Length: 237
Image 1: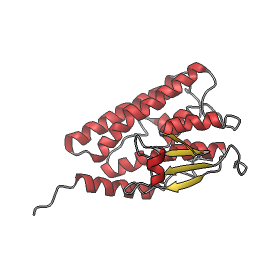
Image 2: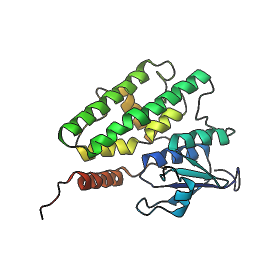
Image 3: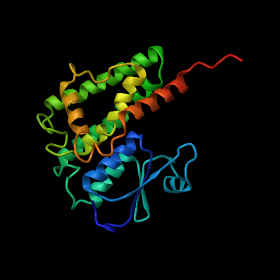
Image 4: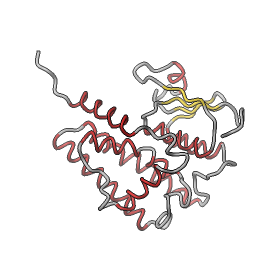
């Protein structure tokens, strides 16, 4: 862990089950950075959260030396730059490889996550379409693992060490499994996506990751309850 006071005081505002918060916790753990974790109640958001992220009023927020940094993947890149003397390197050194990493991280947030969320709260045809779209996007990632020169044949998207794409997708691991449980669907089929399945298992068991990942049972129970509350038909008066 970082020495007391190294690079200043670090606080993380978040919630244990949030996949976006998990991303930041993984990055901090891999870099060995000490921080104070402040659990937020998103129903009654704290003044610190509202002041630190007045635009979106969302978690996670990293507060470093009293200065807030918002949005999970921006925070992860900030951590890499602020603690660039600490291994591992979360971003490739080559400009092209760095661009590829940012591309796939954006793909996960802009294309994949919206369909996962739609599946979680969808019913009937809407649920079926969201699951199909999610699977389509997972298949694109599987194909990239097989053919993209930046990470084909390597242990992680980051090569021999966990990098930006690993954190972007891996931070959602228990969330993805919980969505499968809540919707009784298969999003990552081991037979159709053997590389992605093996990668996820390897990632979740990695040092620095397994220590901060949410309990999968609690995560599934939480999402099942949320889905039930959102999709249950109203009762008659």
